Image 1 (spheres, rainbow, N blue to C red):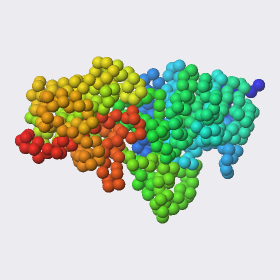
Image 2: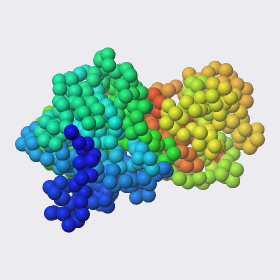
Image 3: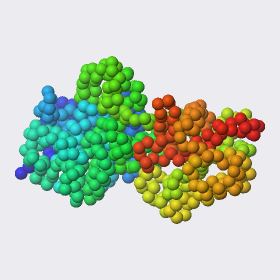
Image 4: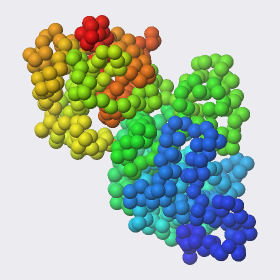
Length: 594
C-alpha cells in the first residue's frame, strides 16, 4: 500500500545520534535533510536584505520586513510555526528532482529567496492549524524558475499537505498555457522515485490514490470549471490573460469549501493593459504602501505580495540592480545571457521596451507613479483655531454620487512658508460596508476617527459638503474668497455654493493637462520641500500614493488613478483644484493675509 508522504517525512526525524552531517540550518539524517526547528528562512532572507547582502526592490523590502516581524511576534490569531514552514522545504529537497537540463534527475536544493517565500506561505497558522495566507502573488523576471516553484507548491499540496482529496489545478485562458506548470510537475514526479511510485501520471491528470488527490490543467473555455472544490490553484503568466477577472473569480469561488486553500499567482510583467495583471499589480502597490505608512488595518490579512522588479526604469543600466527583479540571477538564470541582451539594447533602443518589461518587470505605459512615499510624507499637525488664518481657499472633488467625495481648504499665515491643508471626506452610509469589502480600505475606521462623514442613504448629498465649507465661514468666521471645482461638477452644487460664497469666488478648474500640469508640478515641489502640512491625514496619504501621472509627449501631466478603477485619488484631486486656484491668485492672496 502506498504510504502518505506526510507520514514518511515524519519517519526520518530521528535523534541527534543518527545525524551523519550537520549545518546550522539542517541536518542529514539517513540521507535526508531535516531542518532545525529554530531555522527561519524569512528572518535569514530579510537580514541579508537589511544588511545589503541582497539588493531587493522596495516592495520586497517592505513585504519581508513585515513578515520577519510577524515571524517573531505573531500577528493577531496567527503565529509562525517553523516546523510547518520547513516541512515544505524538506519535501522539496528530499523528494523533488529537477526535470530539465544538466540538473535533470538531481535533487532539488532551494535558494534562500525560494525558501523564504515558501515559509511565508505555509508557516503562519492559528491554533487550529489554519493557514493565514490564502492568496499569494509572485511577480518575478523571466527564467527565474516560476514554473519550478509553482510545481513544488502544487506537488506538496497533492502529496504532503495533509488534505483529504486535494484537488490541484493549473489554470489559464488557454490550455497550452495551463499545461506548462502541470507538465513541469509531471516530469518532476517521473524523475522522483519516491513520488513516482505513489502517483499515476496520465494524459489528463496526476492521480494519488492514498489521499484521493488529483492535479489537472484547465483552460477558461473548459466546461469543467463550475463546481470545483479547489485545494490549490496555480495561475501562471496571468499577464497574458484578457478578460481575466472572470476566470480568477471562478477559481476564487472554488476554494471557499476548503479550510486551507491557496491561490498561487505567478507572472512576469506584460503588455496587456487594463486587465487582471494591472488590477493585481495595483493591489500589490496599495498593499506595500499600507505597510510603508504603517496602515496595517487596511491590509488584506489573507494576501501576500512578492514583487521582484526594478524600482525605476533607468536602473537597468546598472547591473548591480538586476538582482532586484531576478533573485535567481547567476544560479537559476544565466548572468551572461542577461548581459548579452543588455548590450543589444544599449546598441538599439527599440528593444528596450520588451527588455525592461520581461527581464525587470517594468510596465510600459504613459502612466507613471507621481511621488514616492518619502516625498510627500509629513507627520506635522496643526490646530486651525490656534493658527487663526484670515482667508482660506477651497477645493471640491465631487466624484459620483455613490463614490468618495472630498472637500479641501488650504491656507497660509503671515511669515510662514507652509501651506496648511484641511480636508473632509464623504461616503454614502448604505455603501460603507461594500466599500470596505470591495476596495479593501478601512473607511469604517476613518469614520470613527472623524476623518470621514457618512451621508444617509445610498448617495452623496452635496448639501453635506456645502455645509462643511459653510461651517468654516459662519461658525469659525474664516473668509473663503476663492474656491476651485471640477468644471464637470453638478450645476446645482455650484449654484448653491455661489449663493453663500458669491459667483466670482467659485472658479471652474478644467481637468486636463493644459490647466493642471504646472500646478501639479509646483504642488509636487512643495510636497518635496516639506511645505505642505496636512495634519498627517491618512486618507490624503492614500490618495497621493494612488496617484499616477499621465504625461504627453511634451512632458505635460495630469493626475490619473492608473488601471485599477477602485483606486481613490479624490483627496489629491480636491487639493489640486484648491492649489490651482491658489496659483491663479497667488499675489492677491499673499496681499490678503499680510
